[in-house]
Length: 212
Length: 212
Image 1 (cartoon, rainbow over the protein chains, first blue to last red):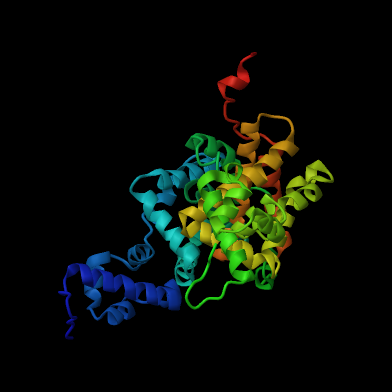
Image 2 (image 1 turned 120 degrees about the vertical axis):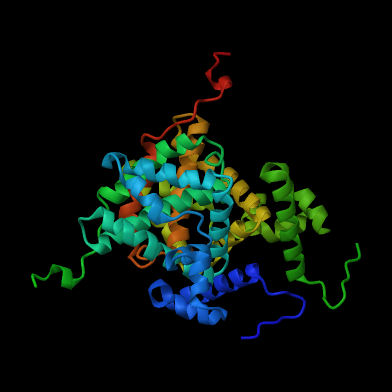
């Protein structure tokens, strides 16, 4: 395949960017489960082996496509290890750590800004949330229906994204100025309740109620 | 003052827009308290009487400048009337009502989108929050220091803006799809605790501790 464009020499960087652009298209249109590395490679005009060479796995390609600076698969086990009563605290502290960090902070800010500004980025973030975050948390929660676990997870997301929006993007005083630990102390009980406490659970679908 | 521009006839609409543009400049640069209707009128090249004619008060000019579709001064007394134990519930229901409404919903969405995308809009929203929302809630809460009341208010804002972001802008499932009352039931206790429960209060400044 001849790939020549005026004024630009093909090179590693261009190829990587073209794979990411193709991945954003496919993940936004077909969803994470519906998109294959082969389709993405075809759209980018490269061999699938090159996609694996650059990105390792479909999951890490997806993370790179939405600009996620952390790997939920690596972070979640550390959050789940430890006292279940302090789960909310560990989640809030880990989340704030990502936003406070000078490397990962600007990356998550850019991802959220882009998702707010543009519907395709929002669709990618939704898909990332549903497949990379909700599935893992539903699995970890164990009891309760998947629907209840998904509602709990999206309530947690509402509080965490809300803190990020208020503190780091809109910079509402005084939440933008207080120490991280003040935020952890205030917000951890909310996250703990959303995950393990009494929230309105949606009715399970009929299939989950039947006895076979 | 001669105001002629190529291809555009001066008229009511232009004047109103020019007053709003001047108001955004002044409120963003000088803050709400630092900006005067006279300065805004001068910047827009109109008589202050015309500003009052179009917008009534400095406060409603500010609301129009940031695109706020509701008047906190009108809404807050209704929220505060009633059982204090159901304050969180009334706040969440009122807030969601504004976002669900086909008239006010798109307006608040545009205001938040603009504040996320652009620093000057964020500064305006911060200023609106601090002067039109925090001051009123601190006043209503009554006990506690103003610093504590402001922290409580910004925690409430983090949860409410977070629900708005997750449900109406990013549209994270299933929070985007469940009935309003499911959200009210889940989120009201959070707002109630932030306003009246145990949250980490910042140390009052030294001046508030001294005995004169």
